[in-house]
Length: 108
Image 1 (cartoon, helix red, strand yellow):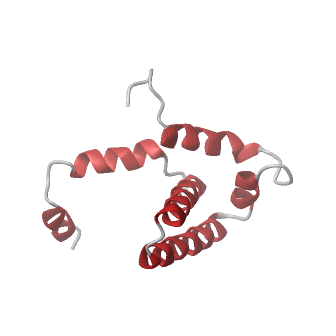
Image 2 (cartoon, one colour):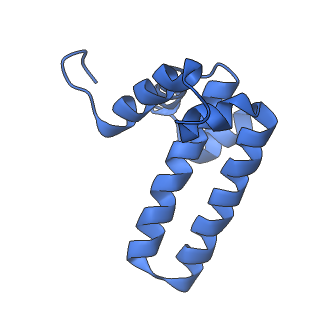
Image 3 (cartoon, rainbow, N blue to C red):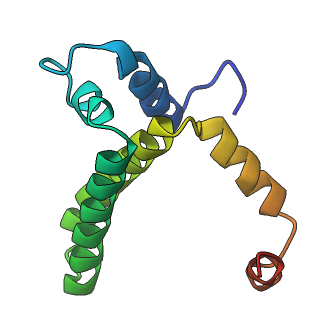
């Protein structure tokens, strides 16, 4: 994305970054980050499981909602460990020219 266009994921990532120093009593994001990377990872895992459940059930609206929760909590978990959306996008760009099978094989 160009600097002139900001998509919803970048806006979310920017908001998460801005909340790093916010008051945990007034910001859910700040509260999660204050609990540390391990708690952020745990919450991401819980949200991922909820998304899997909705995918199995086949409820499109609930899956959409849970998928949004997963993306939010993924970005929070990554931010807690200093991994930015730009880092993730860079890795996706690096993989763009290879098949998924070749890329997975390269990781051993």
